[in-house]
Length: 248
Image (cartoon, rainbow, N blue to C red; front, side, top):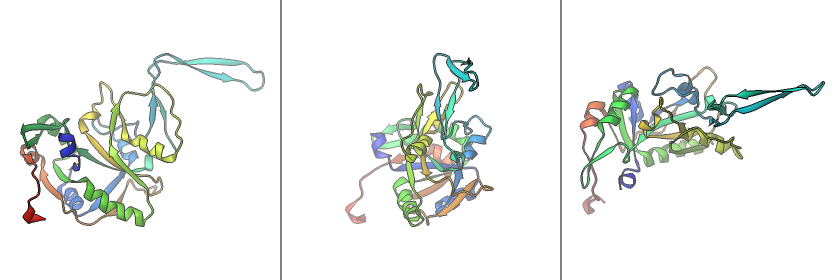
């Protein structure tokens, strides 16, 4: 039930209140994937961003053969060694992140009243002490018009959390490569799943200049959005009801 009711609602966290205000006004700062790769911390940095990662149970033998005499040698790659597969320019792909609402982070108080779990909010404090709750549909509608005018392809969706793969993947299309940004590999030391992440991916590696780490897209003021600090969101009660006839 929670998944369906709150499927259109997203929350985004900010380190600075001004950044939250900018977002409310429709000024979107969209970071390159490389920023998430290089950030050296335990909650955000991920050197597997946009990569397909394989880890085999048994040793893999890498064979080197000389062309002149045909002599060869096999060198074993130890089991559990992560092997990354990515594409050129992946670190420059623009990625907009937010967090979804579902049974992973919602506590049901009554039939139609919910509250964000304290564990989730405590974890998300690492991303900033200000947050904006907003409509996924409104944001996608507004940015969709801008991207269409600029002929920029984009995809969006919830991040899937999984262990390393056990087979090499063949990407048949460019979109399949970009869809890899919806995958997060978890382990005992990296609890990414707590982020409940949703992403918008701009499928173009040339949008961000070489010397920049983000682009700015203006989509106009968000009507269905609200800002507050973390403490207020932690205590906030969320409820739902049908729209009355008078408001239609």
